[in-house]
Image (cartoon, rainbow, N blue to C red; front, top):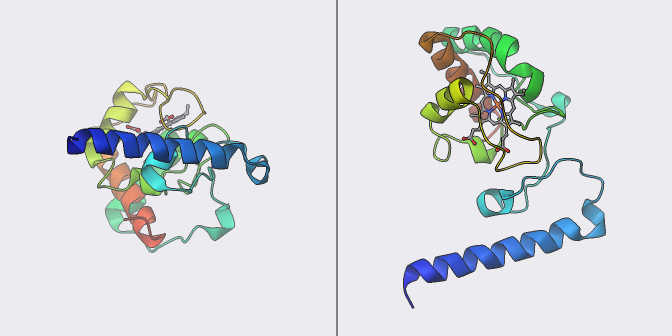
Length: 153
Ligand code: HEC
């Protein structure tokens, strides 16, 4: 059998196991669950992180600017500290580490929006707040520094 097929079969099996876990009663208190999260992040299906558990690092100057822009353009859904809300997922999440969602995917998300594919929050609309390339780069720095401080890298 070709390795490709074996990988496909493994993914299907992983998804089946994930569905089984998600359907089990102990999980029913969760409100938002990544649709395909199991393929990316194992059993880590929790959405918003408790704000009081988010580690707030000392930010670089660029990331501090990014925090302000993020607060204006992204926080309504992704949370002030990128920990997620009822309207959007946490960006402090292994799904969004640089190896999986490179910096350009943040720029694309802001400019073009995102079709719902990992979570059940619905689509992310293109961001209405006008953001320069520099502001977007600073937002990425902010998210990366928050991820790193919280063990996502
Ligand atoms: C109106 C709510 C909302 C706003 C505002 C918002 N997002 Fe999102 N964002 C979402 C949702 C919902 C998703 C998850 C889509 C999914 O199911 O994968 C998402 C996903 C993303 C992703 C993942 C993209 C991918 O390729 O999977 C990135 C990166 C992102 N947002 C960055 C941002 C940034 C940066 C901003 C601010 C400039 C922002 N978002 C503003 C709702 C929002």
